[in-house]
Length: 109
Image (cartoon, rainbow, N blue to C red; front, side, top):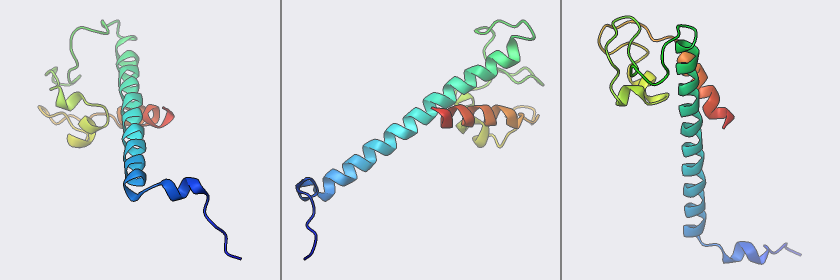
């Protein structure tokens, strides 16, 4: 005798399943980037606190050439990947530890 599907599955349409998958995926991506943003702030704390630099001022900048980072360059994970790990202005390398902390916190969240 063939098994019948529970009535719950009979009520779902393809649109319901696609919608649920989309919502769950969007939520996971949002939560990852929220965690990455927290990781980015942790990077700021780890860099500035030992040097006794204010956490809020001056805005983020390259430690080598001191040029301010653009907003798009300061996006967690995306900025590092987009710049290929180098400063937009002077080409100085951006340590991979920044990326690791941001990705790590993103995955933790």
